[in-house]
Amino acid sequence: MKIEILSDEMASRIAAGEVVERPASVVKELIENSLDAGATEISIWIENSGSSLIRVTDNGEGMGPEDLVIAVERHATSKLREDEDLSRIATLGFRGEALPSIGSVSKMEVVSRPPTAPSGYRLRVDGGKKREISPIAASSGTTIGIKDMFFNTPARRKFLKSPATELSHVCDAVNRMALAYPAVHFRLQHDGRNVADYVAVRDAKDRLHQVLGRDVAKGLVPFRRSFGEITVQGFLSAAPTAFPNARYLYTFVNGRYVRDKVLTHAVLFGYETLLMKGQYPAVVLFIELPFSDVDVNVHPAKYEVRFRRQSDVHDAVSRAVREALRIEAKTPLPQGGISWVSPFSGVREAPLPYAGPGLANRYELFPTRTDVFAMPERAETVPGGFFSSMRIFGQILGCYLVCASSTGLALIDQHAAHERVAFEKLRRQLDLGKVERQSLLIPQAVELSAGEMMLLEQKVHVMEHFGFSLEPFGPGSYAITAVPALLPEGDYAQTVRQMIAELADVDTSAKMRQHLEDRLATIACHSVIRAHRKLEPHEMRALLEALDQIDFATQCPHGRPVLIEWSQADLDRLFKRLS
Ligand code: ADP
Ligand code: MG
View 1 (tube, protein in one colour):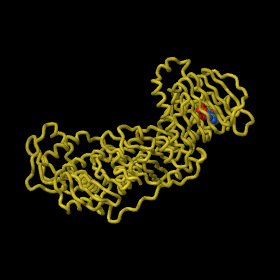
View 2 (cartoon, rainbow, N blue to C red):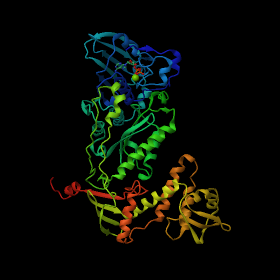
View 3 (cartoon, protein in one colour):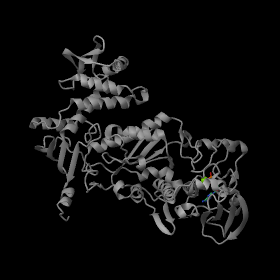
View 4 (tube, rainbow, N blue to C red):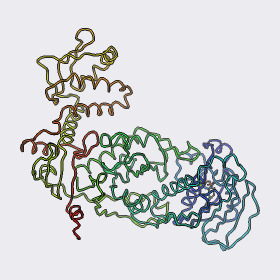
């Protein structure tokens, strides 16, 4: 390795800004350096939530004395050379700013020894002042200690939050890195207590267990899709596992954790109607794409990136998510459709046979990351369809069908099921550009306020799209002359009025599809058999068969479950049978 100072010209092209905001940012930068140095073991020791001490030790390639003295200078980096490098950055760091920035606001000590060097060296920097360098006995690798952060900038020290908050930020920083590098052993200790000890694993799923905990991890299923040069893979929660915030939504681009609006939107877009409002999935998503297609030089802490082909990335992510969910929905194994309502959560833990070589370090990890995500074989789909092959025992409480499925006992919410079927039918028709409509022999009038009249005038074509025909009918009213064939006979005015109200915020074309789908859900909801209606046996059978014809059969368009299943194992557990 040879560390060099970037030319002024190059340095000026680097996104400037403060990288050291809080202890967690120091931890993040130091871990990035360790990973860039090829470390397979990284230990983080902090005291007082990092404000008194942060010490990161790695077994990476280390630095000789010449490199060591330059490393702490501004814009000193071994990772960037000529101009071109900036457009295809493969390392986590590249600006040569972390060590000098950290060194200027703390008392820093760097001890390093390359594996082949006879001795190590120690360099100290005090509030930005470089002290003497001296030989010292050291094991191979690098240890960087940061004492008394912000000791010389009390104003910034004041901005630190409570110790508990700062500690949780540190944990987050470690966890994100750990998720992306399962082959690296991460250890985090706080005030002498073990906070995390993630031994290296071959299987990315095992790392999920370590970092996210069993409960969340076991609800996640792997997926992988490639679209040209973009590969999207990772793990996601098949609804209805859902969380009240985006806490379990992790996105990584080429091994780098990022918080990106486009990616988050794409993920949620992929889930579409499977989540209720205000619900978030658990997703650990890795995107790999050519380094030259993503600009990481846009945010000081490198938390944001810019994609050269943003809409391709959005597309790839939402399609990958959607397809994974579709596959899951098609094989509704007892997959914890009950996990949020019952104490015996996470019914399924399918064996997930991941292939994958031991990933020694980052340099191996990038080209071979895909191996870690080898997909498990899908269970055979039931011949004749999952739903149609069920045995129906009958209807209870006026709204639930009780059935025996191939795996156990199943309850189906008939209203949610109908809604989902109607929704998918409408969606298909809408995609084909024509929604089946029925003309009304006697048009129905719908009285509207001045505001509604105006709205409807503007959106009447959208209503057409959905299968409604509306004609002006005197002042303050419209005549409904046709409605979607799917709607049962009744008072259509109410449906139309609701649609108008909801169409008020349809404007941008980007959101159009989402809005259309929301409206579809409205129509679907109006179209279905309400609860508390007795179903004839042939109607139940028809409903199950219809469920087999559609995607996402296990959720209603509002995200409520259609199906809840108990496998034999669940039942045994409920009856306290020992297996
Ligand atoms: P950058 O990571 O952007 O290059 P830094 O200021 O973080 O800049 O680090 C400067 C240089 O010091 C790096 O380019 C690298 O050569 C060296 N370095 C930093 N930390 C380590 C480490 N843990 N092991 C080996 N080399 C390191
Ligand atoms: Mg760095």
